[in-house]
Structure formats: C-alpha cells, structure tokens
Amino acid sequence: MTSTGEPSPPPPGGVLWGLAGDIRGLLMLPAALTLQVAHPAVGAGVDDHSVFRTDPWGRGERSLSSLQLWVYGGEAAAEEGRRLRKLHRTIQGTDTRGRRYHALTPANYAWVHATGFPVYQHASRYLVRPLTDAQERALYREWLQVGRILGIHDRDMPQTIEEFWPYYRRMLADEVEATVVVRELVAADASVPPPDRGSVLLRLLLKALWPLLLPPLARFRSFLTVGLMPPDAREALGLDWTPEQERRLLRFGAVVRRIVPVLPERLRYLPRARSARAEWRAGPATPGGRPGTRG
Image (cartoon, rainbow, N blue to C red; front, side):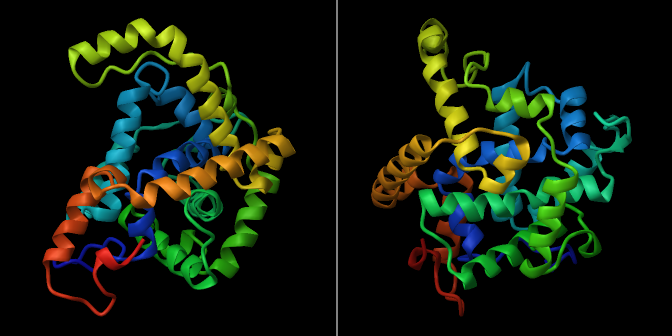
C-alpha cells in the first residue's frame, strides 16, 4: 500500500520493471492488444467506442503513457487507475453474440488485464530471454499488483500461475474469437494515417513518404502481432503461422537481443521508466538491490 492507502505499483527492480519500460516492450504491445479485443465484449467495446481507427497514434500514445504510470508512476498509479475506471463507465452495448456488455463487468475488465501476462511470458523468449520459473511467478505477482491499481478485485483474477493457465485455456476455448477488430489489427494491408506527432517538418516528410512506408510497416506490424502472440492463442483465433515465419522471428529476436542491451539507457528505456530508474538509483539501497543491477 502507498502512504495514502492505495494499492502500490510493482516493486522497483522487479521483473515487470525490466520489461514494461524497455523499448522491446513496444514490440509486444500489439499482440497483447489483439488478444484483448478477441474477447467479444472487449472487441465490441473497442469497435463501438474507440478512436483507434481515426486517431491511432494518439490512442497508442495515451495507452502507452497509462501503462507506464501503472508500473513507474508511484502514487500517481492509483490515480491513473481511477481515471481509467471513470473513462470506461459509459462504455456498454451488445457484443457479437448478442449479449449485453459493459466495459467494467469484472470478467471483461479482468480479461483485458490478464492478456498482458501470457504475451510478456511468450514474447520474452524471443526478444529478451526465457523467464525462469521464479521470474514467471514474480511477473505474475507483479501483474496482479498492477491489476489492483486498475481496480480489479482479487476474486476476479486467478491468484496463482497454477490457477491462471486453466482460466486462460478456458477463455481461449469458450470466449475468444477473430472479431472485426482482431482482423483489422492483424491485417498486413492495414490502412493507417501518417503519424501526426513530432515537428511540422517531420510530419510533412512522413506524409509525403507514407505511401511508400506504410506497406512494409503494416506487414511488419502484422508479422510481430501474430508471431509474439502465444501459439495457443493464435490457434484459437485461426491465425496462420508458418515454419518460415517462425524462423524469421527467431532471427529477428536474435538481432534484438544483441543490440538492445548495449544501447545507452536514454535509448533503451522509455522516458518515464528512465526517470524512475534514475530516481531509484539515487535513493537509499534496498534489499532487492538497485535497478542498475538488473536487466
């Protein structure tokens, strides 16, 4: 708990601290987001209420900023959790199976959060390193802690890895489907407007070059989205993945694993993570060591 009695973010120097702020985490997010919207209620909510089609860059920036607050935001993490719950209070409708949904229905809200764990666990094998059994358990505990920040009650999330995997497999068997939004997110020919962030000169340049840049970028995004999704989730959604694609992903992962660890911290970590790590290093030593000793 924080000094105000709110749920605390995951501990500095933990497994999630090393993953969530690393630039390799950006490559994992599309797979997690796609698995989220494979739930009929979540997919319908995004299809009906999200601006991901009209403002994809702004939507992505806001989602990333929010995630960084959950992990590195200190006492601001709980405030971000309250903001998100308030934002989702009005999101409701009918899903693809004709069922009424609400974004904050515990089962729906918990699934959105739950998807992060299997994607982190699977994608780390390619982009970082396979997690040990102890690291997987620590990551799950830390992900549960993030869930509490978001307002997810313990009764609505499996509390151990042993309980999580049967829940996850049941969701894959009974709930998830290739929703309209899933098909859009994995499309190799997706239509995305040019980025609207950065200097005027950069935006003008990207707009001029976008017809040339978009096709290979869309194919690469599709490749990573499907490849970094756990194989059982791919199978449940009917997404094709060939041995040649697997070999390409292994080669790509090998390059990433060699390059990213030797980058300077200002390039390897996102700004909020970098600031949090610097602040922790400047503080008193803790039993878990300092962040500079990990990942």
